[in-house]
Length: 344
Image 1: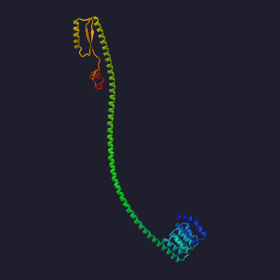
Image 2 (image 1 turned 90 degrees about the vertical axis):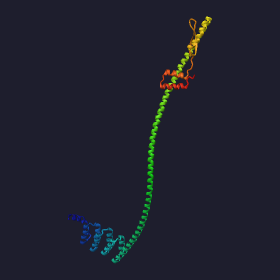
Image 3 (image 1 turned 135 degrees about the vertical axis):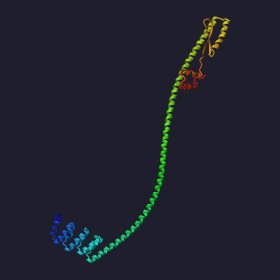
């Protein structure tokens, strides 16, 4: 009850305005009912402010309560229609005749009967047009359906062909994957082999470097040995030269003493003749003998070795005597003697 009083208090200014415009009590009561039902003041004012008779106001209110479309209500309010015409127009509006066509018919100022006939013709024309449109739409729909079905069949065929292509491609891809896996496996095997080859190559290079360093060491030792042998040989040659000079000097002195002492006895000659023979047996293997006279005038033969170059075997024996018979020294000595440093 309190809520209704509050709502009516909101519409009081509008009711007072209608009262001031000379609106009757019945119309005011009808307006209050429409306002209480929730219809806006703008629509209620369409009949309340017109000064219509109560029957027109009731018909308008009933049409408003049946369909509150603003376009239809404004056309009814502005058209000057009687209650029957209003209801007739509202009925055909309910059948689907647009407000624009209803307005065209209402603007012709026709009687109720003529208006009804005109509305029937409009309604029939609209219905036939709708049927034609529906038929055309149905035909279009059938054609569209057939077209869609054909497109669907074509699409299914394309999908089937594409699926076959995809299957072939999948099979080829599987083969390619298998080949790729085999190639990858082979690459790994080759990499492992390469790793083994690289390791073997490094070992060979290291062994080569070791041999090279060892050969360099041997070459240095060889050069040093050659130098040492050359020095020893040089000293030996110098010593042989000095001995030869000493022998020549002794022979010269002996010959001078023989000339000074005169002719010797025959015995002495025989002894001297035998002595060289005996001495030749005692000193066999020497290069030559030097005759030296003693204090009592006797002559003695002194062996003098001639300085000659050694053969490789003699050089080898000489080097082994100096350096020993070690394995590395033996190899070095073989290199030295193989070169033929002192060919006989």
